[in-house]
Length: 426
Image (cartoon, rainbow, N blue to C red; front, side, top):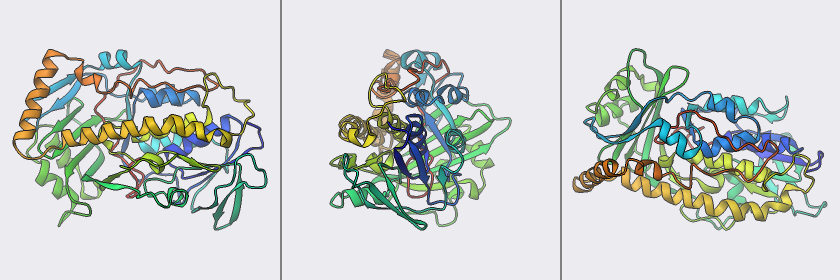
């Protein structure tokens, strides 16, 4: 890519910032337009699995994030009474997938990504509207983006504007957009001194709960429950969590005792059920939730956004940072690679949501019995569910890194944190 190539990234979340860092590494002049007044994300934690960490190796950030891994023991899946259905051993998971799963606060990752960009590259408080997607190969038809400060031209626009992406709607006005996934989520990040616990996810009837330590000593807890879109607690969401989960096993009651109402984030979950015709049009590429919003039940929303960003900038193995061909010329290849993978991951996340949020009495009982029996007969079965997802490797990049970090993965932590009420992922 020529150093003078101009790239505009709409959206300053994790996918957008990763794309900006990767494109800058390839030689682009990058401007990030973020409508919020700051980059500080509204949300809780995010889990980065080995596939995303290997992608971050390409921009030199993988090892810094691996160092934040906090899960060093066993974890697994439990019932509300505390009975273990399946155990996950950290060492076995690390060996299987070639590295850790790291749970960290979203603000930490945003800060690390923004630190890879030069001063002035990110413009906050700047809403943007795509006015012309442009035509690759035609210098007379750059992409055009309107901002409050005037119109900008670009050789490439990366739309990372979230689940309600205005750019997606402009590119594909006939697409139906997102659908409600059938459940809602709650998330908290709090200090919880003096409480010992193993990382776990707990499945009940139409409800799940997860509790996981962060490297900084705080605890990330999330919950999900089958609920109609728009439903909210009659009093406050902490009280709602107490009603739904107050009698579950330790440390759930201890977490709820330490939570204040203002600590709780609640958002309904939506996903893209009907695939888009493409992840690009003209000189514009969609990444993250804008392209493939998915339920958080595999913890892959943000991870797939990171994969998108690195693949967009470095689509071929061993691609040097001095590559001169325009990124926009390769967008059909980006769609060809990313659309089938992300939709396959999304469909798997939908299936997992149906399994772990089963309602009624018979279904969950049969599910739990089968999980416990299979876990005893084939201990690796639990990890096998992430084959083809966590073992992904980036196609290329100047670092040539494959990300063989040796931290401790925890394959249960879901990507329930979000930048704001309109987004499943960054």
